[in-house]
Image 1 (cartoon, rainbow, N blue to C red):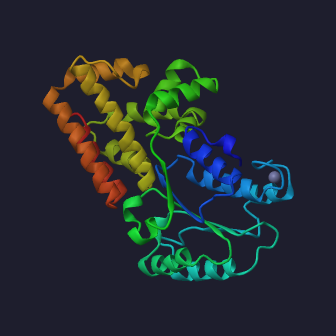
Image 2 (cartoon, rainbow, N blue to C red; image 1 turned 180 degrees about the vertical axis):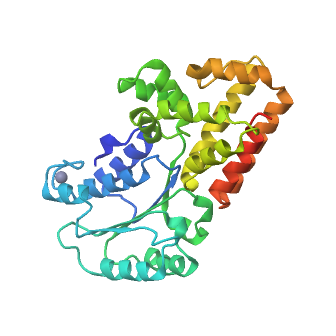
Image 3 (cartoon, rainbow, N blue to C red; image 1 turned 135 degrees about the horizontal axis):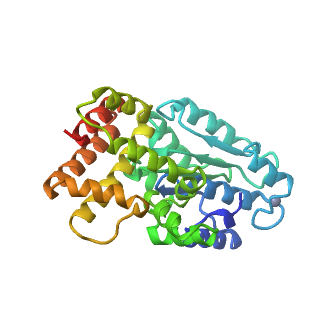
Length: 320
Ligand SMILES: [Zn+2]
């Protein structure tokens, strides 16, 4: 992993490169932004560049190879163990960091999902930030910066990884050879993440989106069994259900745009289906469906049962 693989966050990368070149790296960083923005890859690239015997992570030397395999003895990774990062994990990290580096110039730690430190872990980690053992570099990543203790925030240099603009993602996809329409649709569905957009294109995500949306559009309250089985298929877990809800949100927004005669439809390849649905619904009706979709999303983020939440949503979206 090298900096050249990080797409869309050139300003962060050039800041890190400059700090590396001038020997002015901070001892602690907090990367915060959206899922799929490449925060962890950036953290790994930074450590690789720091440890590499060549320049800027050559990818060839023993150090770069060990980092690529996440098996470097001086790179410590901390991830949530279940729902939380626990105090025992922080104590173990503190012990590891207290030794001299085995082969790298310094020790490094990447602590993922830093918002998941429980209070005792966060307080223990604060001590490490206040008195970093040896010359270690600590890199935290989080998608929920508002859940990080202010005392931790203030001791880290912060770098933001915000959602990328849809047009930026689309043009990056076109640069990698994607055709115009799929690039635009995948970019619009990717929630600001280039990585996610690439996955949508590569996993034939556009085709499975079409099948899914067609299935949901065909649901009717007169046939309740298919409604339940579709909900079961689409809501195997929370991520699954959130993905579905996000697709439906964009789709019904398209219906709204079509109904009100506005431009900017995302799913242009599904125009006939969008037209036929918009012709059958009033504006109020469409707004009400969008409202239901956004309530379902909220419920899911608050850990509602995915299958039940999607069943209720389908009943609200289905034809009478
Ligand atoms: Zn190297």
